[in-house]
Image (tube, helix red, strand yellow):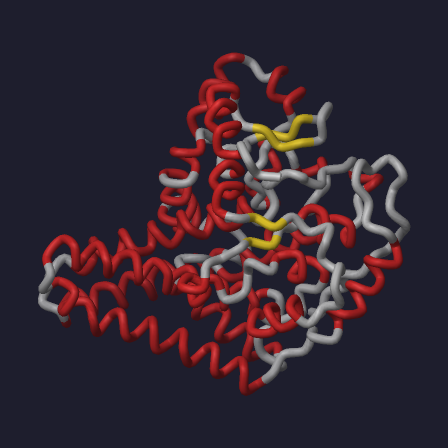
Length: 362
């Protein structure tokens, strides 16, 4: 189940931005040193996650004592726990969190279930994302369900769409709708449909397990609106997760090339970002902000990503896009790839807003 993430071929000459073979080789060599799971760090990270998960359940009635403000605070904290739990399951999907596969599968399924995600089904699509990230092959609406990408078309493809379909997609991909209502559709509707084939059992397990768990806690706390607050927390976590995923790849300078030019090493350093997450939020993200490292080698566990990044020789990450607050806000508006300028761009209505946000950023 281990995945090769190295460079298979020399960079294509037609690529606009290219990392030298020497830099890429050294980066790959450096990252590979950290591609080994550790039992102690794994259980430490898992233990903290379980403590946060159970702790927020126990603390719920105490937050309720402070009325609407207390409930809102609980939803935000609980939503952060959901994101952290999902990221832990994401590592297990890559078989990188624990040294043993059976532990990754067992804990991964349970953690994914808590985050309303069918483990095997999501893993299949996510591994495809790692194989194709940065390729224009997946910048298509019909590929969205398979790749999990957040950029669905090029500007030339958008211009060719019939008016009716364009209006529907324009609504669904509007940033306000996409980062709020679409996660609700994905996690609460699409991921709840068992479908056919071997993934049916996994979806059914998640549906039953979460329903019983939430109902049990609802009875334990004698109601108190827990069911609805837990739904809001999961919705919050899902929205934050989709937002983070978009910022990991949808920021300029972006990397999108034709399939025959695609190189996974180049895509890692040019197409995956380094999110500047504030210290008080790092307990949520579990190192996923070091996304360039994750794409260079997905076998580096989340608890080693920061050390891997910080211990690199000076200049190794110079090509990686560093995303600070204003750039992040501006990049949330990106919805398509301009195949003439090789840049992400927003819908025309949002261009003025994006320009104001980007003003003063070098």
